Image 1 (cartoon, one colour):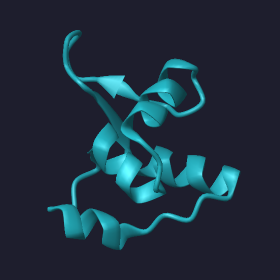
Image 2 (image 1 turned 30 degrees about the vertical axis):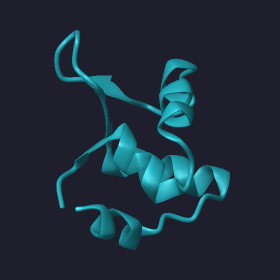
Image 3 (image 1 turned 90 degrees about the vertical axis):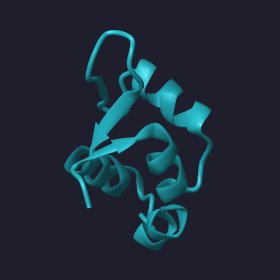
Image 4 (image 1 turned 180 degrees about the horizontal axis):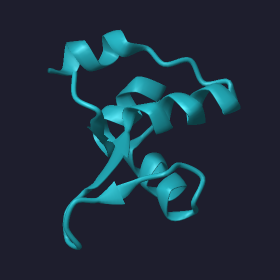
Length: 68
């Protein structure tokens, strides 16, 4: 599994919408970055794990495996 996740993958893992993930990134709640200025956001796996743990979100990695 790669270290950088798309917002759709993060949304599936946390059980929220892709729009929610993008809002959290825009608000600075969830660290995210763009590979190029016009690309989609990516979230580092370790950052996601820290974010989820600090807010009590369980990460269901099986949701990611089902989407692939």
